[in-house]
Amino acid sequence: MGQSRLRLLGGREINRLGFGAMRITGPDIWGPPSDRAGALKLLRRAVELGVELIDTADSYGPAVSEELIAQALHPYPPGLLIATKGGLTRPVAQSWDRDARPSHLQAACEASLKRLRLECIELYQLHAPDPQVPLEDSIGALVRLRAQGKIRHIGVSNVTVAELNRARAVAEIVSVQNRYNVGERRSDPVLEACEREGIAFLPWAPLAWDPRARALARAAAVGRRIGATGAQVALAWLLARSPVMVPIPGTSQLAHLEENMAAAQLELAPRDLEELGA
Image 1 (cartoon, rainbow, N blue to C red):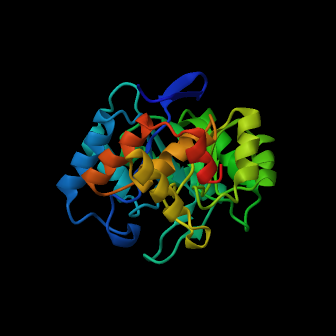
Image 2: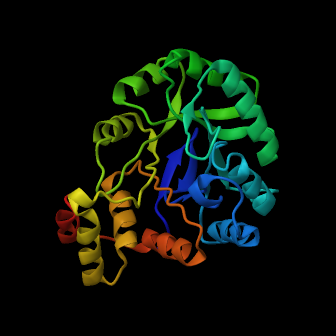
Image 3: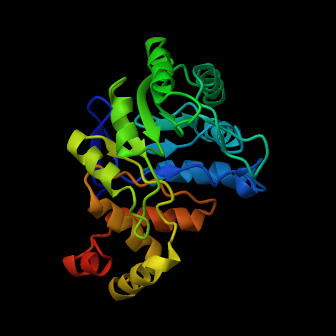
């Protein structure tokens, strides 16, 4: 059985299990990885395993993740979608500062184009709304970038339903990227809005655990019963949770990558979903 697929981006289809390229950088998502050759090998292996969406951002490193993706995979194989984000800055390792001014987004996008060795970024996402900038102005900057031929489709990240609606009043939004996993479901209303509108939902931190919800223990228990790991169960749960869900698990370890990708072949029974609180 192959991966399930999702039609998005003007009719294009992708495999629903992607790869998040945040963890291929150095510690704390800062600087280069200690094993650069290993990071390049990991990216190439992800494509071999069926990944058709790689998600990154200019703030990962910063700049390092995008540079590694280009070094490993350019010229990009047919069917591979590279998505990136702008709107966060990293003055120091501990900071993730919002800057969604139109001038910053223009410069950030142009820098990402150079690092990724692309003439047009197929999916460019606002990394987070900036409370100092009207959301309409930030999205308007992405509309202008699209008109300039520098991006093809627009996505948003870390938004509420109200913010998604405001963004959609300015531009067609094809994807939303919010924190979501088996133990963290506060974005359920956003996911439901995406389902109604046919918008792809990319859950970030798909394997993060809320210990208060005991999600890890439940996923591990299901895994022991069906012969899978807790991480595979958590990813299979996301794929079963919604037809617009596109998990993007990230890792710096080849073994974890292969374990995660095997989750695309895992089908959870109604009993399993009930135990996970579906």
